[in-house]
Amino acid sequence: MIPAQLRRSLTCPRCQGALQDFPHSLRCSSCGRDYPVVDDVPSLMPEPEIPDDSCELDMTLMILARNEMENLRHSLGEARRVLDDLGIRYEVLVVDGESRDGTREVAASLGARVHSQTRPGYGNAFREGLEQVRGAFLLTLDADLSHDPNYIQVLWQRRHTAELLVGSRYVAGGEALMPLSRQFLSRVLNKTFGGLLSVPVADLSSGFRLYKSSVLRSVELQGRDFDILIELLVKLFINGYRVAELPMFYKPRGEGQSNAQLRHFATSYARALWRLWRARNSLRASDYDSRAYHSLFPLQRYWQRERYAKILELLEGRTSGILDVGCGSSKIIQSLPGAVGVDCLARKLRYLRSIHPQLVHADIFHLPFAAKTFETVICSQVIDRIPDADQALAQLVRVLKPGGHLILGSPDYGTWTWKAIYPFYKRMIPDGNPGKGNPKLNREGLLALLERHGLELLKETYVGGGEWIGLARQPTTRH
Image 1 (spheres, helix red, strand yellow):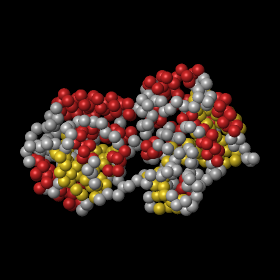
Image 2 (cartoon, helix red, strand yellow):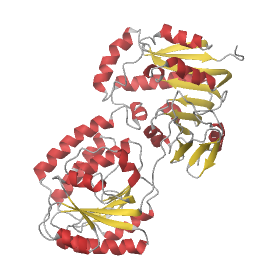
Image 3 (cartoon, rainbow, N blue to C red):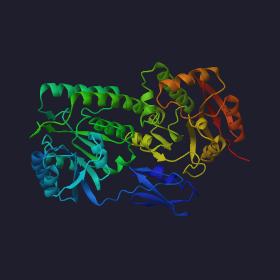
Image 4 (spheres, helix red, strand yellow):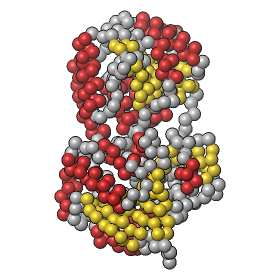
């Protein structure tokens, strides 16, 4: 539910018309546009994309199999019994990897829809399976009897608590019966990925999972082998989706031998770790701004903390009546419980939703608020990355009350400090070049920008000698 105070302040971003409430959307009473509300965050972009969450079925159970005829006969039969008891609409999808033992025939005889894999490798089988999913939720389990089908009921009961639920061997209450050598390698793998990628999940490699199917559409997967499971989990986490673990019992496989080959397995994971490290530390990661505050890089950590301290100092203790445009996932918005956070990147807001309730998905050129709504507007590290600073500032001024304050922050492209730091920043931070920036936005250009919009500069300060932050005031009357 959208907080009442925030809801009262919202208007149509296109025409500023009043918005009417519908179960999962807002509709403009003037122009008739619909705007979705996703995970209690209103998405008020000027050209809204209404998500299509309609599905034929409640669940797709997907099993990847290769020469698993006898195991599949038992596991699939048990899984169908559990799913029937749940009383849901479901399908069973078996992706077959060129089995020679009758796996396809057994799967079909047990009512499964069989897809014959066209490209080799576990990763390709997984991707091809995802393209076939018709359920609102996707359940994955191994065909080899190592996953107990009775556990499906536990995952299904908790399906609304996270976008990805993981049956975990390594959380309290979980257990894994496997050879000590394999358990050692599994734990090292999970500790390595979880630690280096700062993902608080103990069992990233578990294949017993329940996904909300709609979140899978936004993820591009590259993994070729079993590393695709870790890749998918990490990328969902990077995109701000909730990942939760539930303890499970993992038992030895039934008939046959595993299809995993250790040497190939290790190579795939090593490649995946490098790719995922770059993605995890990218500016696009949902929690990038929050993590940068605690960065291992001293310069980045200093810069984030100085910016935070200087902006809070300029706020002079104010915590309400504040709009933070381009809030990202920063510590600034997290420290202002009464403020409204706006960002055009939905993943940043997904990360924040459990921390900060007053969030809006919108862009700076079409702010979905009535005129003269906020006493203070913060806009830090945005104005230099957009093509029309004047249009953006006009929107910031429009929603500011007479006598209200604007805190504006931007790199000062005229300083030697910023010129020296910027190449280092691009090399050290993956995707650390969000754009060439606007070289006119040196101090003089920023002051001229404020003057053109009738704002009076009250204070100015610098972070590290290269990032300018100014406090300006809106006149009590405008001519």
